[in-house]
Amino acid sequence: MIDGMPAEAIVAVVKREAQMLAEDLARGRMPLAGEAHSILSFCRFLEASQSGTKISPVALPMTDTAFYRKTTERLVQAGKLPSDAKEQFDTVFSRPALKVLISTP
Image (cartoon, helix red, strand yellow):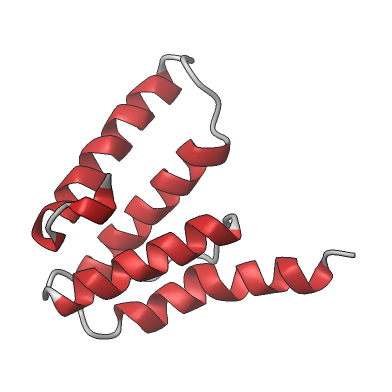
């Protein structure tokens, strides 16, 4: 879905999706796992990146990490995220993902 939309719309769409997920979680309609955790984590990252705050590292599945990294690059190119967002992304998502890969037997 996000792949096909203009970069200018992505942040608003991700925030809305996170709001809907948070409502579902609050009402017990779904557990905080898998895709919900991934989307909420990426939304937290977007908000932190835009406001200049830092968040703790989060390990996500490699496919999610790669997709969100590509999306972050698009947002930086479109001017929707600051130029250092890619480095922030690597600190928050890429390094934890690599640690999981390295520690997996």
